[in-house]
Length: 413
Image (cartoon, rainbow, N blue to C red):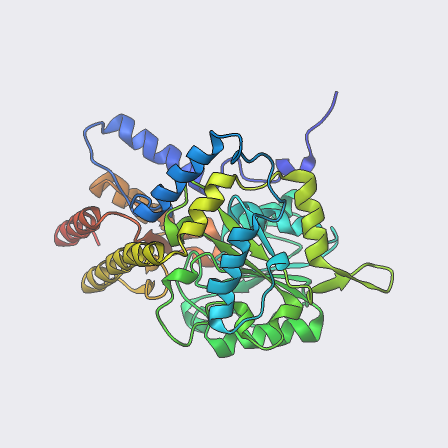
């Protein structure tokens, strides 16, 4: 009888957010009249902006006419979108990126999870702790992680990010091959300064590492000292691959569009004494396993760069930023310690009274019908924290604050 890939047996039975979804469903069954407010999973609440809707309608109409119908598109994405990405996301910041180094896809989660396929199974992986689970789980499935011992995988290098080190990971004692960095960070909402990130670029160049740089929340950056792209830093194109997404920038969580930048300068060993171009191999991988983001979705993504699109999506982002400011202020007034939220849609909240992460999750759910994400679900260093998001509506954000104040008055914090 055929057997399952043994690496799948190593994973937890449920993905973190699937487990939260199950617990919330159980609560709904027991409290059918409760109005649940989610500050948990990082999904958006505002609808697509008019510029995007108009582009979708136009593209759908095109698909109904023989002279405009599109079938399979270019594996790297349509030129009209890649050119806009080049101009607005890179050249506008003084960065020289070419369209053939940009690869459009259906989401940063897919890209971050799949890119590890390009590297040897023996490659050593480093991740920050706490960490977005996909970075770890995709390498578990690839057979690189080893065995799980006391909450950590034996072959993965962990870089703790805690209040004690200002959430800035220290260089590891064991040199990795692949380094996952997320800035602005999910889950902590914290950032790396230009100087700190330059230090990681220099480290990667010195030690022959590749940085897999997740920049999905770049649109939320407010501080000048936080780079909008890793390629703003000297030498980064030699050692870094950057992942971007329209999900949080333009509300595409249900529409699905993202892109990866793989500079031609970024090369790795072929194991035979030579070097190979990662961009070429990523294109080869995508053309084998993927048929591309739909034409109508790419037209919608292109609309976000129009004058109307830029104005409209920035207005939406400001709304989420305002939610983050309100949440952060209110939680601190309640005596809780809060990190993040300034340059990211996430707040990293220290749980009160010595509770653990899941304990505080259950308290908020069962006593206030509020959903957050237990920090321990992101790694061992996440214990004692929960992640809250600012993606709710303004009314839900205010209601959530009111409910937490009521808990505090009741003395349960």
